[in-house]
Amino acid sequence: MTRRNPAYNRAVFMLSVASYPQLPPEAGSEVAFCGRSNVGKSSAINAITGIGGLARVSKTPGRTQQLNFFRIDDERRIVDLPGYGYARVPAEVKRRWDQLLEQYLRSRRSLRGVILLMDIRHPLTDFDRQMLAWCQVAAMPVHILLTKADKLGRGAINTTVAQVSEALKTEFDLPVGVSGTGGVTLQAFSAAKRTGIDDVHTVLDRWLGFEQAKKTPVRPREEG
Image 1 (cartoon, rainbow, N blue to C red):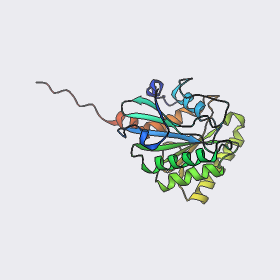
Image 2 (image 1 turned 180 degrees about the vertical axis):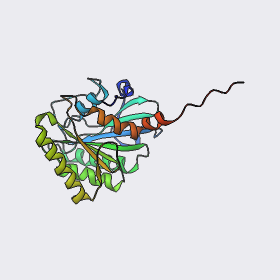
Image 3 (image 1 turned 90 degrees about the vertical axis):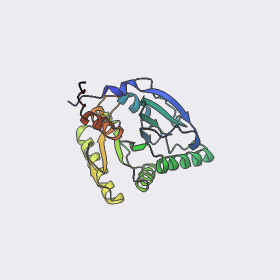
Image 4 (image 1 turned 60 degrees about the vertical axis):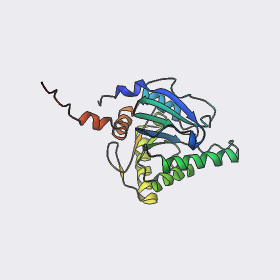
């Protein structure tokens, strides 16, 4: 089994922002988590970091209404984006969210990739397709988590993964691979069962530069 990166266990809440000018400085690297409301985004962040209360879990869809930044270390962050597609959000609020999300994806220089969460029972909603389109325009790498995989059997999981992969190829002309490869990648994931965390760490390590740091040789100390 792949060894999980303990760095994510040190994640702490950094700040929340409601507008683009409030974003923190763009030094270092960050990865954004996004998905339709009630897709299990907060639960996934908590499972991936191993910190139960890091991202607030709510039974009310659309609870996350700002960009929430979590600091891993001085150079690395993860960002919890507002859940999209919740019908009870006022139209003006939804418009502001859409503008903020699109501007963030297009303009944020420190953003290295997007973790897009979809309910494995209801993948590729219109909102998911809109997010994929934004990421495609911004040339932003995407890793898809098909969440709540514990709700399906193995056969149904494999079928859904294959169907989503084919849809990405035909609808978006996107190359699809497995975690750790180029193009759009996807996997099944369950926060409840803690399955798929190793694969997510592989993607995060690559995007946030942990993988490169492991490969950088330590220079021997010069003797004077």
